[in-house]
Length: 100
Image (cartoon, rainbow, N blue to C red; front, top):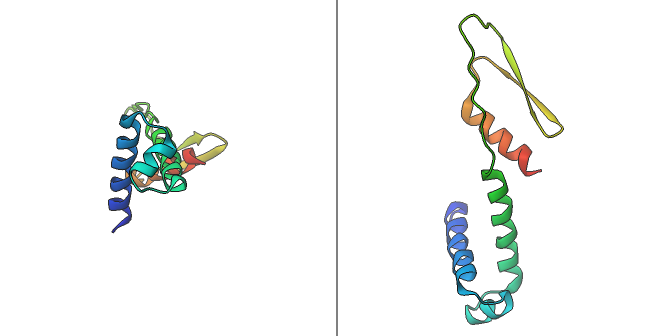
């Protein structure tokens, strides 16, 4: 099972647990799941939901604005972004920094 498949599997299990209305120990016994596994994935889900609540601010640079770099601050960390940057890489960096 790949990491992505494992995350999807546990996301479904966590959803089932939350919708059950049962306590964690009772749900684990009924579903043959170890309590520490459920608690681990509940923590992972909480961390992921924190990261996904990030919002991006629009940035409009006119043609007359000839900046060669932009300083992005995430908490105590500053990242310098230069023209021609990879937006996906920047998004990945910000997610990692925000999770710390």
